[in-house]
Amino acid sequence: MNLAPYIKCPNCSSLLQLSEEEQLQRTFICPICTEKTVISNSDANLRNIGSYLNESDYFITKYQDNEIRVVFDARKEIIVLYNDEIVAEKSITTSILGDWYEVDFSIKEHGRIVPYSVRIDIIRGRAYSMHCSIYRKKKRIYLSESKSSKMNGYIIGGLCLFILIVYLLTR
Ligand SMILES: [Zn+2]
Image (tube, rainbow, N blue to C red; front, side):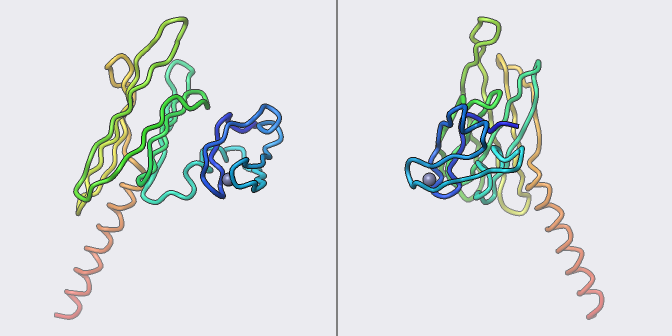
């Protein structure tokens, strides 16, 4: 599989546009830091964007044979890819208690401009969760909870159980 036309340099995280040759060879040299990167994994384009992120996640959905991917980088930005092309990018700042972000963009489908928007909702604290919704013409076409927010729930649940067992054993 070819690389996506846009990719982030794993070394300096500059956003790069790759030539067809580079996409095909899965090899590119970053013009910013001059580091050479060879990507062997077929799904590497997405991981590459998300790999150095913390508390970040990505969401993938299909709508009428078009693939929409949302990459959420908690400390920097939201990137939306439509059939592997970046269609929206928005920088963000996070707050401690929780927040939501919205990114609007439009896509030309069958000659018509269609408005889309992506919304990320985050609740922090004990009940940490992250949800991603995608709207097309103001109608929701996708809603999903982040894998990392579910994981957080398991960890907190496990910890509570552990404390309870220790408490019962030491009574
Ligand atoms: Zn670079």
